[in-house]
Length: 368
Image (cartoon, rainbow, N blue to C red):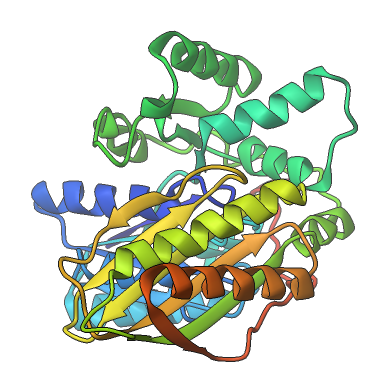
């Protein structure tokens, strides 16, 4: 019997960092853990970082778990068969919701004899949550993105507030208390996946019974689709060559994200997330991420030394038109090339907007 742990949560909440940190912690407890990344596109930056830390990693690309349900099941089966894992943690696309009905219940109904499905966990970025809450307090109409975020929180068995180290202790406790009051059927925990602080509270929550499994979202799929369509999704690869003896892969990626952050702030474009890996010719790599317009990038991994060449992968999810995102990234790359003495050759940008969500299954709670 394997344990399947489903994660959801808005773009930039830190699902991948949470998944990786939790997998390593569970392995220390003697579990054999595999993880599955998921995205609307292909060439995932996160998968590269996860594979640098974990042995058993799979991807489901080209759509969310709900629309790629059989692909998810095949990935689970393959991991169990090849690596003899007993625990699989999977993170859904950050713009996906309604997972209780489209993923959790179908897995329990059709595969319950071989699989224990842990409580559905929604990972929350406290600053993103507070920004949506302030807009509501000001009486602003609920945006489609805020609507999507609310649905993700509403259906959670476990609300996992990540990045508690980014806000003060008093503010953190106030936020946790507010979420508990407004979501009485959910277990609310707070932690930092980056530092590992209080991560044990999340692991403990996964051992408890699901408390919100009978939730039925009052969800408008047209509005859900509209929320996803607000985001342009870009995946692009670039070959990088130093003009001198070597270039700083970390500095190149940081410059691209700084330029993109400034552009988004100037155009009032919400950044879901933007991530870059640069793998150097000697097999080392740098990885940086950005989750807020106007903010500085976060360094997830630095390249150890300058390199003569490398290959970059850019994943960007930004609330703008695809053509605008293509142009913004192209200009950011030009600035990074100039700043770090690099010449780059890019694949054609593949920015797109997700198609209408069409889940394979959508099951009501038992007895409903």
